[in-house]
Length: 65
Image (tube, rainbow, N blue to C red; front, side, top):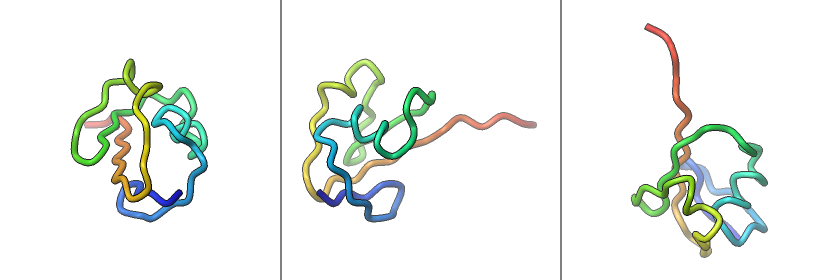
């Protein structure tokens, strides 16, 4: 199915947010996620289903000063 990830349309076969992160190469990375502009805590990703057309934002923490 096609979803938008950080503004870019991507094809994924995953049915859950957790599986999509793994498929997109994020695996166990510590990231924040928002699905359709709603924050999804890490503990809820495995139960969060995806639908075609969903908008996913993945944010990784940055260090520096």
